[in-house]
Image 1 (spheres, helix red, strand yellow):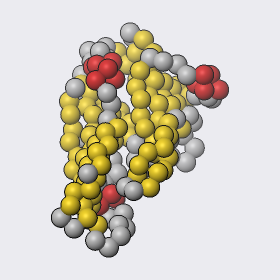
Image 2 (spheres, helix red, strand yellow):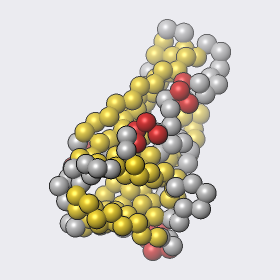
Image 3 (cartoon, helix red, strand yellow):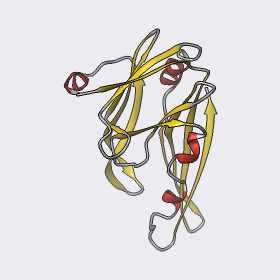
Length: 183
């Protein structure tokens, strides 16, 4: 069985956790032209510092084929490409009450054999008590980070059925589950 784990690492989770109880001043992202998304990076400005959510492709095994897959990273490192962005600033000015990670487990079977077990961080939900902001990786191959504001945002994430019903070859069966982990 092939096992792939592209969830946030413990240091990234600890960095996110350090924001709980702090004021999120604003986020900076690409202008929303057709959809609410930012390509490759979102800058998160808090009262204790500046953080970056990156989405870059890496060549990985995608169910038997080597493909460019978007992988997320979170931290304080400012990459040079950020300086080339024409970011807009969205003010938030609210205290972070909770942060949840949307974790997904995708499994692929050939007959009775479990051939792939893949874990990924599908998104981040920042809860302010009276509203939320989410960042979602909706598509495996896209470096776009989808941004939403509202309530119960996990319900607006792409359905796990998208993976299950991806048109797998005959003899293959896909399963997918999602868990929300409060950090």
